Image 1 (cartoon, rainbow, N blue to C red):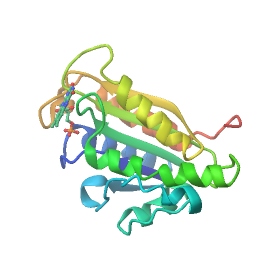
Image 2: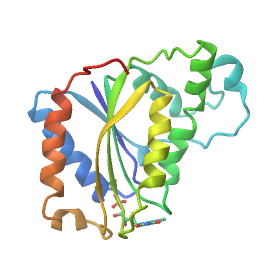
Image 3: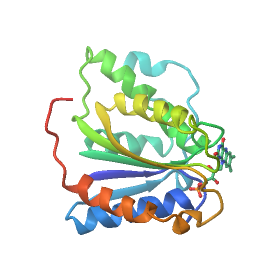
Length: 193
Ligand SMILES: Cc1cc2nc3c(=O)[nH]c(=O)nc-3n(C[C@H](O)[C@H](O)[C@H](O)COP(=O)(O)O)c2cc1C
């Protein structure tokens, strides 16, 4: 099962359209997925209380409690998000920051994650065109994935995508997302992560 994380607060936005196309590819390739959207979830920011350091569990009682299990048991992860100030939207970052509890679990388990090794894919969009546009979001995503014993094996990054639906006018984006979804849904880990 692929866990698909929709990381934009904008419903039907560019990253949402890209992710849906990617997931069409997954489905047509015979893969299964569950999509979660951060905008529909009540996930508080990490309070930095460090309680998880001792227990590996987060003390905040909200929708994140049901997401931990999905993250740990998914075979693969795909995350789609827009660039916000060279980072990720706050709702998406809140989910990621709450994975500090998974880092703590790893430490408690002496470096062994209780997450199965998995591969991951990122879909990112941004309005401007700079070379470093995706450096920040990609770094955040890589370290988020590390808390899950997951590795980023592919990404599609689209610059100059701003207004609602701009991605539909991109000459190749939706086709590339579909094809990547087919491939990702069918791929198997070939090496130890
Ligand atoms: C709060 C906010 C911050 C943004 N910051 C950036 C930015 O730093 N660089 C950039 O290129 N685009 C930035 N954008 C533009 C979005 O990345 C762009 O509109 C994107 O296509 C939105 O994707 P979505 O439709 O999936 O939400 C920002 C947009 C918002 C609302």
